[in-house]
Length: 324
Image (cartoon, rainbow, N blue to C red):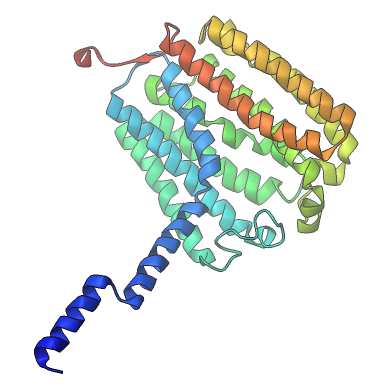
């Protein structure tokens, strides 16, 4: 074989892509996917959505670019907290069937890598929010991350069946953060948005725990069905659903939203209570699974109605006059 033919063969191999290069590319893509999974993107999506809703309905003006930065900071902060949570809970995740395929128990990401990612992104998100938007929103973001990691993950989750009740505050901060990004303050109206998610969280997670109780018990997590039994859990789900219903009307009563939201909250709240009543009466896994699915839809529809209401003449943020 001549030198020219050898060179041509080498060039053809590079053009076609060698097996080693293909493996390297696939491995790189897999690593990226695993690091994204550490951020809990499905959980993050709901967090980002409620954060955007708080920003959108807040009174005042904010530049669209700063609004985008604020939402990005909320997303990055939520992902960072999720990564630290996966680092700390890697022993539990390895036991439960729904989490054992996560990157750390699956052996695809080292625990130290997950912790480093979480810490760096958490600091980045807070600094981004503070420097670009305002420090009130940044402080709330830092508080939410710290509460989720230290209060819920480290302190409450493995110690008390009230883990979700108290720890749920971490997931309730995003609309308050979004509101503060526009107004630079915390108000009764933003606290009402916080309270909606705070009251929604226990029945949402208890519905899941009703049909995952064996796994939680195996992992040593004292969820309510494990400690108090399924009957008491069903009763608590119904109680919280009933309490949540009038709480969801607060944005309408406070003037944050109008009739579109008020009617939606009234109807969806009734549907949520009805499903909670079914869970209480039927005592079946099927009704618990339906309750869990409905709870996600419930929160999404509720905050969508909040956005729609603000966009059709209700209170909400607006573009600076110079951009109109």
